[in-house]
Length: 524
Image (cartoon, rainbow, N blue to C red; front, side):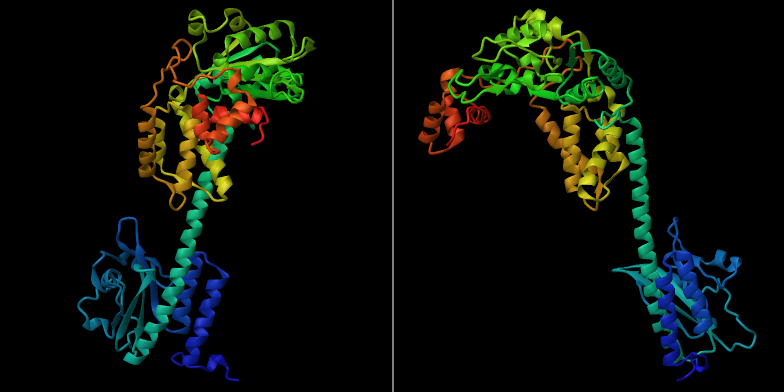
């Protein structure tokens, strides 16, 4: 076996030995300053390529010596070039190799890094190769050699090309790690900021005065069993506040039951609230417990109470006064222990004046009134809510999602007629279509333009406590003959199973028809 120490540095075996050592350096450590300097030192020691240096772009778009372990500080400070200046600038700009046999004979060589190595050197050569990343040049690897022939310089050039490729990998991997680290740091800061403003697992997030006032009042109301009336625009988080009150009360270990009064047909609402006996009406095939019974010992949340019909209001008032219910089709009273929290986006006093809401029921429900601010009234909280939604979606996608600062500013300036619900939907869409996990200003503008065109169809007012809600045109609920199972079955059969046409024939919306099918347990 040949002792590698006896090999001439110019031999192929010496080159292979050098490349093996270089590979070990790259595998052992990918921190740029350590790895690149070690490679340059190896070029000097094993290949006699002296004054090896890596030149990269600085923040001022100038080429500057960034790594050069064998150069002194003065030489490094002088190693600054314009993009097209000298041999180094030419290599960077064109991606071509520069091989200068004798720098003293080349006028383009700027001699900023001294070329006189030893007094007995006949000539000094200079080699510079580009450091490529995909199809662009990101830097230059350069070195000098004394008293070498052209063939040796060609071998040196091939070696420098291989080392330049290694350096490129080190720089790219470091940049990827750095970008990932910065993103994780941002996400960590965002998480800390969001958690710092969150009111617990319910994700009631905000620090604006109006929000904190509503939140504090909700916590105080949890100390009693008094009825609470939450008033606020759609999308302001009324159910979350109701759940907060429940979970902060002594009833937290019992059921929290919610019902949307606007989503239930008038003739079925009573059954939903109080239950029904078997056979009490067509389609009542079994005994059914109502929401009051299900919430016994806990909390019942009546959302959109302003949409409750007058007859149901009367029976609700009786229940609140006597704490007893009667199932539909029964004359038996059932005692219930239920804390009621109601919510509406409508102006109940205006409905009372118009004869659409009972004044005595209003007083029963409005023991503790809590007004929830709209999102535009607490615009300073929007960035906190954005952070929260981003964290939710990145946990779902298992990868971090970043957002440009100007995109956050643009979202904070929008009026948000749909409030937090609309903001959450917008952030979800932005996350789904974000390129390279980054939400940009242009993405936000596109979606907000769509949102604006849709919001032009509706109106909103800032003062929800006094302004009447906008009139919404809806298809009226039909009387009992349209909830007759056979009538529904006949309509669907007449329309060859097309529920949309059947609903239209019956004077219902598709959702109303489907609700009746489900509730009456119609088998099609």
